[in-house]
Image 1 (cartoon, helix red, strand yellow):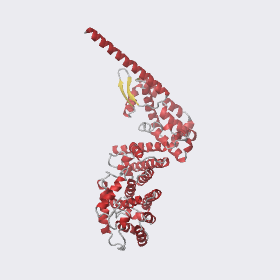
Image 2: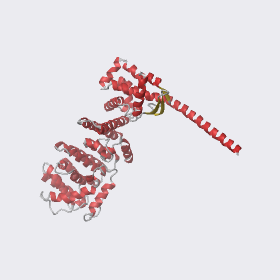
Image 3: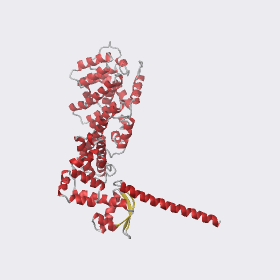
Length: 494
């Protein structure tokens, strides 16, 4: 912050440097050419707003330069900001008067509370303001927080400002308001450094953002928010923000999951599902499942479980059963989650079916479907039994591949209960799914397994791995012994 009176444009530069120094992550950086330089927004505000609103009520000229007391941008910048916000209030004259008194007294908290309580932020969402203009004005309000000198008051007003932006949209009928709202809260997000505050604000940004800004499956750089919500990227960011309350993380993960519901609903309304749309749908489903599992992972013990945990556990289980192939790596540890384990008591049929898809084989699935009391789970969960059967066949083939390096066609036909001439089709499907790599020897009628995904890794798998490692060790020893003897023979020959 500037501590001495400077003449423009140096104070503006100082303010911008302050903003950037507080940014743990610039959310909207590089999101579009019009948003790449935050300084342009401030310059736009300072250069244009005084001309745009010079016909409004004139403030007394006897006041000291109020910006010297608050943010030191330029003469009367604070008052010009108030004149921008005043028209959206119920009593602009009283609003300006209250704000002027707060500015004169250097009462930052009083100024912010007056702006929030009078709903002044709603005016920035009007279609008459561009996103850059709205964010420019709102950014000046966010800077005031650091002038409070009281950490608890900062947190309270930070949350109040974000809530005010959300509430302001209730009275505005403008298609572009969600983009403005999320960009305004992003300006606040960029200024704050406390981890819990940043998570709360990011949650708010996600809730306000348009579906197009949330949609994964786009080229990187198209949407900064969608890029940031990649699970690995967000994990890295959270690590930089320090210790964060579990409740705040859970709310963030839930917001992303619900955001993906909005994305999927919008994509489903499309006129035709082309290849690009199909990729976006699959990416949104994967991200939704990832974040549902993160929500469930935030419940560390069964004693912490609540109705929301049960709801997420059920939905995540259905997702895992409906698409066990594409979401294979995402959900492989789903059974270890306390919230999912609790389904054994509340929804035993669903849990049993999930366990079969995670660890079982085709015969286990057939035994399950042979029980009438279990079959109702398909209808109640919206599952297609035919698709489940196909997926279970692929998973059984992958399990078989994990047990043998060479598999006779006859063994595959027996496992899948199909004719031998259908085996190659199933192998091609399994290879296309990415769960295994294999070659087919049509003369010998065997499948040569090169690599396959592991569906579970318990004591049986550890034992099998030990056997393979011992065999490999023995083979390597044999090669070394042979090389040593070969070298000795060569020396003797010389």
